[in-house]
Length: 256
Image (cartoon, rainbow, N blue to C red):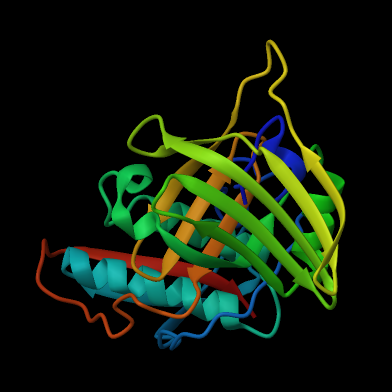
């Protein structure tokens, strides 16, 4: 969720996405459980010099078909029984180039309740941010119309809430300043803290890499990557490929 000096208290949105088969591996924590129909595997290929096998989902034709294919690739990866972080980061890179929302930080689709589906954290990320990303299945970010945000973690009787004012500082960047953190057990507040901005320390920020009706991909100022899916629907889940520029294709590698 929201990142930053104070924002790193929780999940915000890891180093730039890399393609399958690239250099240094980043330690990742991953969460997932997303509903969505998988794209059909149409061929197979090798994803690196070692020749290890990988499934390749290919959608070609119009630009909208290409976007639809890339979306299905990601949903298939997120709902897979095993997590392939390399394939997911490659899919993030692909979707980022196909973002259907021109100014995601200012778009009304940003508003809503978003469930954390997957994250990849930098070593410098807050300990609790990484812990909750690993163990809490109910990990949400709620973005409100009044330019406020709440990071909400539900773990049995434990509830952790961090609230912040937010502001779009560019077409893709959201500034976040965590202002309050509350911890409750069985509905009773057991710890609360109000955070005051420190001189010389600015707000954290979240770069919105991709946004559609049902999925949001973002990166925080500490480099952590986050994939959220909209809770409760409300978007166009029955979206189908349509017309557009032809002659392109979308692919994603999934290790077998």
